[in-house]
Amino acid sequence: MTDIANDVYTYEKEGGISQSDHWSKQREKASGWQLKLLLFLFRIFPVIILRIIAFPVGFFYFLFSKKARLESKRFLNRIARLIKEPTLAKKCVSPLAPLKHIISFSLTLIEKIQGWGGRFPLKNIQFNNDDIKNLIDELNRGNGAFLVFSHLGNSELLRSLLYSDKTGVSRKVPAATIMDVKVTAHFVKMLKDLNLQSSVDIISTDDIGPQTAILLEEKLSGGGVVLIAGDRTSAAGDSNITLPFLGTNAPFPLGVFYLLSLINYPVYFIFGLRNKCLSLKSLYNMFVHKSDISFNCTRKERRQRSNDLAKSFVSLLESYCKKFPFQWFNFFDFWQEENAQGDIQNEKKKR
Image (cartoon, rainbow, N blue to C red; front, side, top):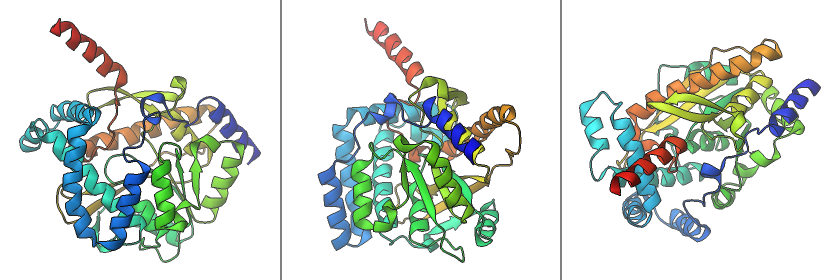
C-alpha cells in the first residue's frame, strides 16, 4: 500500500486529475438561487410538472447563452458528418438542433434531482445484455469495482441509485465519487439538501494525494464502488493523452486511467442514456462494459496499459455519442486547439 500511495502522490504532483482551464474555470450552468428554486419546486410539484417546466427553461437558456449555442452547434455539426443514419444526421444540422440539445440537458437536470431525491424508479431503467450481470454478481459477492462514467447522458443516474440503495444488488453498496467540488459547488450543496447521504463520500480532485490510495482501497476492499469521470482533462497538459475522437484528436485525462491502474480492481465503463431526449417519459438505457485490461504487471507496463484503458473508454464514448448526440452535455470547447484555428480562419474569410 505504501508503494501505491507514493505512486498516487507522484501522479498528483504531475498533474493528477486537477481540472483544466478550458472547463473548470467556467461558472456553473445554474447559480445558487436557481438551484434553490428548482429544489423548492421539486418538493411541492409532481416530477412531470418539472419536466414540462424544463422546456421553457431550456428555451430561455438557449436565447441568452451565446456560448452554449455556439458549442452545441459546433459539436452537432462535427458529429453529423460521422453519423451513418441519414435522419439522425439531418436532425443534428437543423437550425433548431442546438435548442433541442439544450432542452435535452434541462430535462436531464430534472432527472438528476429526481434520482438524488430518491424518486427515480429502477423500473424506468432498461439494462442490456452486456456486462451488467457480471457487475451485479461481483457486487453480490462483496467485491469492489471502479465505475468510469462520462458527461454523455445522465452521469448522476447510477450514482443516485447507489446512494438510494436502488441497484438491484442484494446488499447496500458503499460508493465514493471523485469530482471537482469547486466547479459544482452549488449542485453539491443542493445534493446535501436532497439527500444527506449524497455528500458522505465525495472526494474532491483537490484532495488527491497519498491518503487517497488508502481511502479508495478501503472502499473497494469493503465491496464498494468508486466512480470517476473519464472525460475531464487535467490542468497539466503533460498528464493528458491525445486520442482520436469524433474525427480529430482530443485530450483525455491519462491521470484518471493511471490512477485506476495503481489500485488494481475491475474497471467498468457505464453510460446512462435517455431513450428519447425530448420525451416527458424518463425512460433510460444503462450500458455497462467491463474492461479486459489487467494491471497485474510491472510499473513500466502499467503506463502503456493505462493508455490502452483510455483508448477503450474513448472508443466506447465515441460510439455512444454517434447514437445519442443530443445527450452530449459538455457545453465548452472540448476541441480547443482545432476550434481556435477554425475561428481564426473564419475571421480571415470575413475580412
